[in-house]
Image (cartoon, rainbow, N blue to C red; front, top):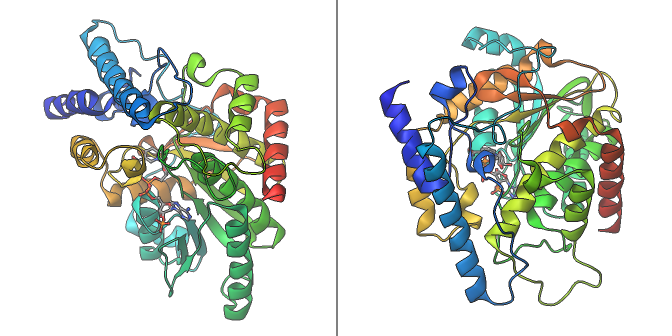
Length: 403
Ligand SMILES: NC(=O)c1ccc[n+]([C@@H]2O[C@H](COP(=O)([O-])OP(=O)(O)OC[C@H]3O[C@@H](n4cnc5c(N)ncnc54)[C@H](OP(=O)(O)O)[C@@H]3O)[C@@H](O)[C@H]2O)c1
């Protein structure tokens, strides 16, 4: 293994609880997972704390636990990351070829693409790649601005609905989108937990609201509004296809209970309760699995020509963790991640290759990709649980309606 990469991997492991995977392939040498991957079964999941002093001490004790676990894992002779690794390859869905600039152009020139969460981070890198390849790209985020950008706050179902209304109107006036709908839709708006203010104005945990509910409302309404082209490819970026440890995520019933508890009872309490990093991270991992389940469920709802795929994106240094950790810690974590992270250009190119891959087309079923490897992975086993999928879609429909 490249010594520098290995040292850097270990440095990040120490600083941020990031770990290496033990798959006997390229990944072992080249990559480490994100903190999301490497968040192991916490020994104790505290109840929501009652004072901010308790919250702080729990947050730091979680971080200390993660660091201690990494140290302990690294000190073993035989690594056992079974519970942490990205799921094994999906041989049926195959691999995507890296694309040359000319091939990117031939895949995207003249197409229309919508990148939700395209103002920063991974979404921005994807939007730039598609745009450079000749696609007409509409970028969405709170900070998006015309031309080419539509500002929207997607933390509430109303915000998502307003966005689709605006796209329908703008599309019909410009003729750009309305003619055939978007050929490519990228859903990458996502957040990490915000312990000091965990809930949206609708009383839904922010991670569930942005990572799951917003994507559901948008995709459902984009389809209903005729904004998905007949052969549209939809790519949802999250840490997808992970093999997360059972005790953290649990079975279908545990997922249902945790999701249901992520919504405040009505009328909403004033002021809304605060949370802890530990509870927020656990819910975020639940959201990652639920996202796999959700996308598979959507395969049964959307027209067959629509391709659904999801990626584990790899690592990109972004501001994602700023909502979770104290401001002094964020630059340290980002600095430790930097040697392992992909550049924005690589991130954009990998996702563009996966999005364009003909191999990802499989009617009625989503496929799940490790974007840095350009390989399809098997989804979390719960994604195959049709009953859970049906429950999840119904639950999300209900939340969208109640909002
Ligand atoms: N970065 C990584 O290494 C990594 C690794 C694994 C998984 N992921 C996942 O990939 C996704 C994207 O990560 P990232 O690093 O690109 O994050 P990021 O840099 O923080 O970008 C997040 C994007 O989402 C948009 N967004 C956030 N809240 C929004 C809201 N309420 N309404 C509308 N748009 C909103 C932001 O736009 P505005 O600020 O303009 O609203 C921004 O464009 C996340 O789900 C993350 O969990 C990332």
